[in-house]
Length: 359
Image (tube, one colour):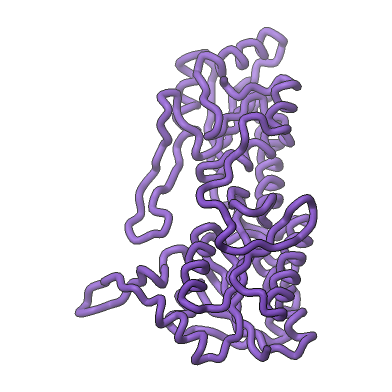
């Protein structure tokens, strides 16, 4: 092997640069050149890349984001092309495969979420030699126990909860914190437990305002006239509907969830009479330096991905299972979102210590 390629696709997550660094170090030790494609699959289609040298990877371990840039819109199978001053969408997947051959890239390492790795699987079926690395702060990817970026997001959310506690207690308010996670409640569950939330609302568990109100009122009766509610952005309202902020045309993930915290804050006030405030943490969860755990996990993933590529084991994704980094074929990865089991050990532990899930 002489040349490796690498790209980062989908949303950013703390630890992307740590993966790039690990791949570069393993490749460099084996005398293999590493080429980084800019802005996800866009760089592969447009031929926008750079040769990654030592100066590019120096100091990357602690940096958030990705030095290669990323996007979640330019899918090679539905790629935006300008024609006669209009944007039309075309299947450019053959061009992606051809560009890899033209550049003599022996294997492409794709770091991305379920959307980016689904594209990687389809390109593999067209003959591309690809190894995948799972990434998302939402921790909702099938085929692995944990994705890098999740631990950092939980840490950020927990720090926010620590700050909200002081103002909630001072003003005797109910504070509602809305967290990311798409259609899974992993971030809300873990940070809610770590941050001492009184109520945790996640997409996987149906809830009623009556049950949430009971928790808030019981705390007041115990001499605690304030409460903290953590809600995942994908949590459904009492009618069983998700709250959609907007829909983005041309995006691989067009539905933008958001606003459930404001709805809950209003319901709390009308149901209990408690003054309530909503906070949407948003993209703060995706930014900043990766936590020590994510730096280590990202490094392990990057090293393992490089080893798979160097040994010619293509069409696989690295994976964490029982604490060990292993791999599985793209075809063996289940479809859909990895959601929180309603009987998850942390859900049961949270209920046992008095946290309400509104059910």
